Every structure is written in structure tokens, then in C-alpha cells.
Length: 181
View (cartoon, rainbow, N blue to C red):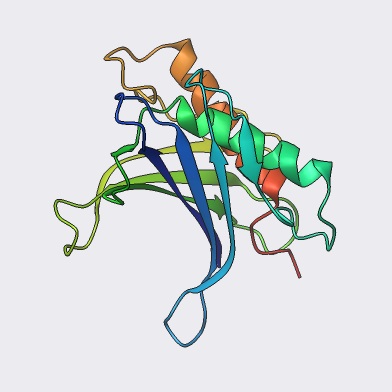
């Protein structure tokens, strides 16, 4: 199983996330997950739009090109709007994203977003809340989404659904899920 662990940080100390770090993992049979790829993006002027990124081969197609940069930027821009970030360079809050694959063939049936938080640097993270997008008819398009306050503004509205949709679709574009056999 493949999953993405994303961390946002407020490195400038102004109370707004400005840095996104992505770790692409693959679960191994040995029980230790393998870090396969790492990427980062930075919003230099804190306008929720990434200005600088280092992606490498983000979609694992064997080429490093502008498409990799676009995919990273799309995911990071959505993630910055979640308001799920760490103060300074800490790693207490993370988002783990994985595809939901109920069928061995075809596209994923959905995307699961797990918001994890550690109470201290030495404790295991706990699941704070979850969100997901689902493809009910197997056509590769996510049609339904969890209703949660994704942007953490105290209101569950269409903006939250759009943010979850954006997060799920930008994750699927990365193609970081197990390919059907």
C-alpha cells in the first residue's frame, strides 16, 4: 500500500502555513514503511499560493518535468488552505492521504484523508478527524465527500466540500496509489 504523509509548517512565525513537505511512503512486508520520495513547496509571500517548489519525479513516470511541478503546486496550494499546520519547524500535525481501493482492477474507489496530531514529540500521533471523497459508480470521478469543517473556520459549507474535492483530486493526480494488477 502506498500513502502520502503531508506536513505544513509556519516557519515565518506569522500564524499562517508557508511550507509544505511531502513524504511518499510504501508499506513493506517487513513492517517498516519505506520513504520512496520527498518533495517540498514554499509560499514565500503567504498568499496561499506556492511560489517555490522542489518536486523531482512526483508522479513516478520516469521524467522530471513541468507536470511534476504542476501536480505538487496543486496539492500544496490545497493543503495550505486546510489550516492544518505546525508552528515553526515542528512535526506534531500531519495529514496522511491514501487511496481507497475496493476492487483489484480499475481506478481507486475514493481517497481517505487522516488528520493526525501528536500531543508531544515522543508520543504516537492520534487521529483527530477524517475526510474522504468517494467514487460510487467506478467511473474514476469522485462524486461524494465527507461533510466536515475542512478549512477550520467553524462552518461546514460548500467551501469545505470544494477543499476536500481539491485535496482528493490533486492526490489522485499524483498517482501515488497501488496500480491495479
